[in-house]
Image 1 (cartoon, rainbow, N blue to C red):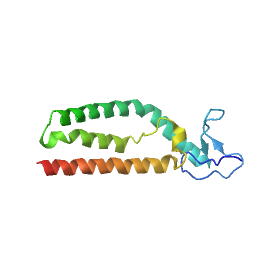
Image 2: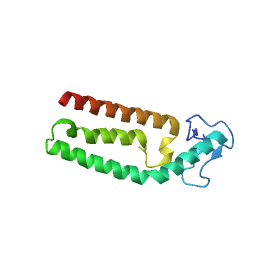
Image 3: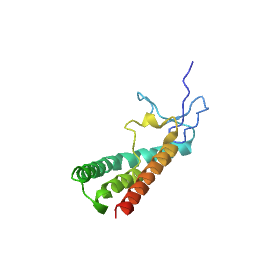
Image 4: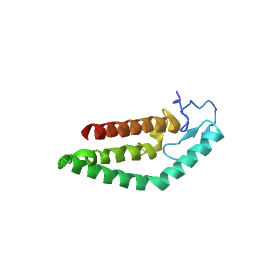
Length: 134
């Protein structure tokens, strides 16, 4: 029995006998249901490869400042600024999976929307905490 293949971009089940493949002959092939999804997936992968390192470095800096803010008991607005930075980075750069095959169950489009909602919730939470601490 053949495994069901999902489109890497939209998450729909690929119905063709020969779907569009983003990386043919790879260990984990990434399937697309249409030429449009193939083009959008390629654009995302190119954007991801160009921005992932910068995003992880910014995230590391914000996490370090967040540890300092809670470790040294900073008070007021500066206590929650790193958490707002983490939420902003997650919202702008929703890279949560190291391997692209992990996007297949829901697709890149839906997964990025879900991650951005969590980033926005973190921004709102940190903003509410800042307002409450003043």
